[in-house]
Structure formats: structure tokens, C-alpha cells
Image 1 (cartoon, rainbow, N blue to C red):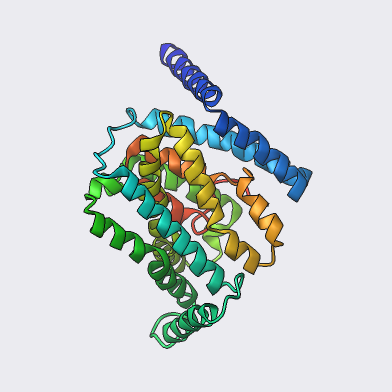
Image 2 (image 1 turned 30 degrees about the vertical axis):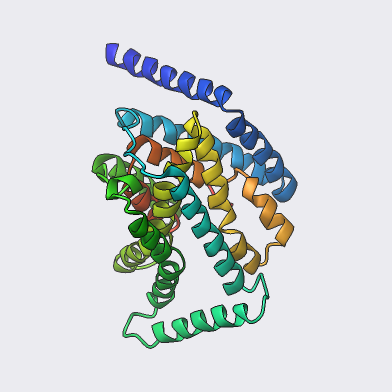
Amino acid sequence: MQSGLTLSARSYALASHIWMRLKETPLLLGWLVTGLLLTLLLEGWMALGMGLVNLLLLGLYVLLIRWMTSGEPAQQPIKRPRLELAAALAIFVLVMVVQLLDFGVWTASPWQGWVRGFFAGLNQWVYTLNLADWAKPGFFSAVSSTIKQLLPTLLVIFLLGCGQHAVGLARPHWRLTAVLVGITAIFGLLIGVLLRAPLVQVVGLYGIGIFINALPEELFFRGLLLSRLKKFFSNPLNALVISALLFNAVHVPIEIRNGVPPLTAVLGIFCTDYPTGLLWGYLYLRTRSILPGMFWHAANGRLGFIFMDL
């Protein structure tokens, strides 16, 4: 009985803390409200309801992460925060330009022809490799993401002399990581994601997915960008909001390529119906490691889903 009361008291204290932080961060509270309104306008009442459910799930994940971590670890010293933030933003612009050209959103000649020709040739090369047919599309995406985002990020980290801890390459928090990935896999089992292909294929695609988006995006958006943004804000949640918005923005070109109207895709940056950028950023702030987010990120869509999806 006593342990039950203690757990309830801790949960209440955590929920009160989250609410106080929201009130102290108008940028985050404003985004949540604006995001729900945009979700309603762009996607309708069903999507709004799903967005509310996902915000509730976000709160539960935050409580779980906070409960399983002892506190925000001290951030590793950043030698030249202004220079490193400028370099991170330059990578973001570079990635956006390459994405716009590669996905045919920006038809600037001759650069579009060069970029699309390069990746078309890369795709043809991948399909000549002795790989299983189910692995080839994912392997191409992994190589493409490595070239577009991972290599530029690693190059900047090397040139700036950032230590591994300064970009979140720290302890993996295996217990927390296992719980988060496990929850996603349970969801995947319930809705059939884990059963849609042989287990070896599911596991293989999960491993490939680490290099498609999990490692490149967690290293850049959380390990490099968020940690540098945090140096310029007294409230780290403000930095979290900006990094999450930029994380949403980098997916606009592929949304447009997939048929979403450009204005809808741009406004979608501010929607909160699938708030993974906030969640993975918060996980980084609580662990100062990109590794739990990397393994969890790769699980989303491959082992299951972190949030409810229409």
C-alpha cells in the first residue's frame, strides 16, 4: 500500500513539474496549441483526435523517461558555441538544398540534373549488388542518407575537434533503451507490423534503418544542433522546440515528392500530430546521449510505431 502511494505521489509530482515547465515555456505551449489547430485545419477532426491522443502518449513517455533517468547530466563543454552552431546551421541548409534538388522540388539547372543524376546512378549501383531484393531499397536509402547528412556532420565534427561526448556519443542507457524499443515492438506486434515479414527481414530492415535516418538525424539534430542551441537559451525547452521544428522542416521535400501540396507540407512543420522531434530531443536532454534515441528512432515504423498513426 505504501509503495502504491509513493508511486502515485511521484507520478503527481512529475506531472506537476511538466505542467510548470510548460507554463515557463510559452514557445512550447504556443506550438502545442498552434499545432493542434493546424492539424484540425489541414487534416480534419479525426487527425485532431489522434493528435490529442499522441500528445497524451508524449506526456506518458516523458514521465517514463524522467522516472528512469536520475536527472539531466552535465553537458560536456562546447569550445566555440557560436562557431559550432553556425556550422550546424550550415549543414542544415546544405541538406535542405540537396533534398530539394534530389526530390525534384527545386528545379534549378544544372544543379538539379547533377544531383539527381548522381543519386540515380547510385541507385543503379546498389541494385547490382548481391543483396536480397527486400534489402536493396533500404540499403540505397542508407547510403543516400550517409552521403547527404551523416558524412557532412561527421566532417564538421572532426574539423571542429568535438569530442565524442560533446555530440552525444555517450553511454547507451541500455535499460531505458530496451524499455522504449520494447514498448514500440509490443505496439508493432499488436498491430501486425512485426508479423508482416519473416523475422530475419524485420530485424535486417531495423538494422538498415539505423543508417537511413536514426544515426544521421540523431547525431545532427540532437547531438550537434540541440546541444549547441541549448547554450543560447536559459530554458533548454526553447532550444528543444527550435530543433524539433527544424527536424520537421527537413522532411518537407520528401512530403512534397510524395504528393503533399507545398503549402500544406510547409504548414505541417508546425503540426503536433506526430511529435517525435520533441520526444527524441527530450530523451537526449535527459541522457546527453544520442544512442537511446538512435535505437528507438530506428524502431519507429520498422518494429512498430511510437505514436498512433492514421
